[in-house]
Image 1 (cartoon, rainbow, N blue to C red):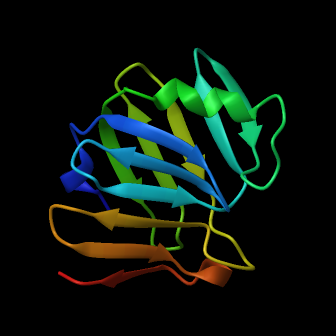
Image 2: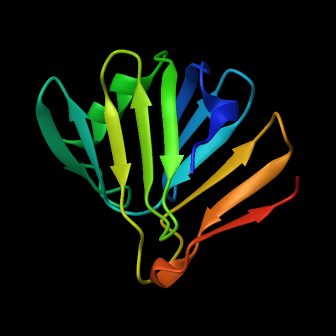
Length: 124
């Protein structure tokens, strides 16, 4: 499923918390709690939100970049593609919520359910 309300939004903040949080121009946000792949310039790195290591700073590639395409699968995977070529790929988690998202334009929240159980939508 396409996430149209985030298209054209720039990432204004990246923070490392219990997961990695991306905040966009319109105050929408994405929190990634599952290990994910970040691809930039033909190279792919594995980033674990629970561990700060040499790959963690690479998440800053998306800071001030514009999201051109955001999608999620029925199983709960997430893909975020940015204008400068960075791709964030989050697989579903079998143990907990891999990611969650708050959409300012609609006031809704999306949550990737554990066990590949799909994506729940709360709000409009």
